[in-house]
Amino acid sequence: MSTLAVGLMYGGATLAVMASGMPIALALGAVAVIFMYYFMPAASLDTVTQNVYEEMASITLLAIPLFILKGAAIGKSKAGQDLYSALHVWMGRIPGGLGIANVFACALFAAMAGSSPATCSAIGSAGIPEMRKRGYSGGFAAGVIAAGGTLGILLPPSITMILYAVAAEQSLGRLFLAGIGPGLLLVLLFATYAVLRFKAEYKAAQRAYAADPAQHPILSNERFTMAMRFGALPRVLPFVVLLSGVMIALYGGYATPSETAGLGGILALVLIASIYGVWRPRDLGPILESTLKESTMLMLIIGMSLLYSYVMSYLHISQGAAQAIVAMHLSPWVLLGAILVLVVVLGFFLPPVSIILMTAPIILPPLKDAGFDLIWFGVVMTIVMEMGLIHPPVGLNIFVIRNIAPDIPLRDVIWGTLPFVVLMAFAVVLLCLVPSISTFLPNLVMGAPTR
Image (tube, rainbow, N blue to C red):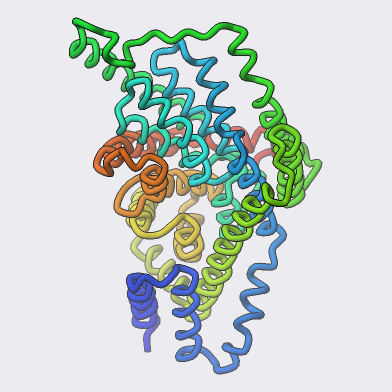
């Protein structure tokens, strides 16, 4: 049987099993084992556990459960609400300041937690009710939080970037640094849109309630004293110090990513114990349970995805697909565009973890041969996968928003997120035109990459 036929069967079987509703990890593992049985030597089945273990025996992957512990410790405490409250007080006088505060709160929380759903839940549970109470439309409030939450997979420490670094065999520290510039760019774009959208809603409210402005809360003029502003800082500053300390330890060369993750997890537990009194077993139980569940789920997906990729490589499916792409002799930018469209389509159905581990063996060799920097591409791919978190039909953050704000119709949530999808696409175009947005900082800190 030809490689093409085997590859089509492999892909078709994968789609069929996933469409059945089977969990992603079990679906990938089942397809891999079935094809090992029929197309590989019989002894291959005896080495399944060994192959999975060897693929997962990476010190880089150790950082994942430790960063999840750090994110769970912060997410299960009131740190997100305090962070949001402090930013709200300081930005209250800016037009659309509440929306901007939510964007910045999402960015800072994402940098501490490394998880998009956790960021959406922690900031959204406080931010959406406050925005609604002050007259912001439900779609606007939902869109700001859903889009801000996506920064969790771009700003370091990003679990998605850890997986990409493993799959692409790239420096994790360099990849983390490469995400900072584009992350700040998205924060700026989101904040700018928040100001413009607020002004539009404010003018509409002025026209509708010209006779009695007090009837619409968006027309009220809320003021905060300096005492209120400085009073909001004490609970927030320790977590900002934690974030700064973790980054200094990582990029200053004082600790490896895994050691940094462990340090961050321990310090996060210490902070929530000292600031919020979260230290009793009944308080720590939900944190550890959440960490265990999410880590187990991710590591199982990673293990089965790596087994899936191993079988794909053994059967020469990934190599054949890569060679077929190269044989098309597409121009580098057409090749990049086609691959990004593929990632967008996959984002309709699959989470970022699965997209990276399933597509990396196929798309990275042609991109490397075409002269693209894989660190730069990792950032671009991450932004495109961010779009998948907030566009239908399976945008994860959309459903997180529905869970914490069930009174906002799904239609309004989707329409509220679409402008941010456009902004992300614009950011991708900017990164293609000006790659240094991503590459400048890692080259400055770690030197130019060796070829």
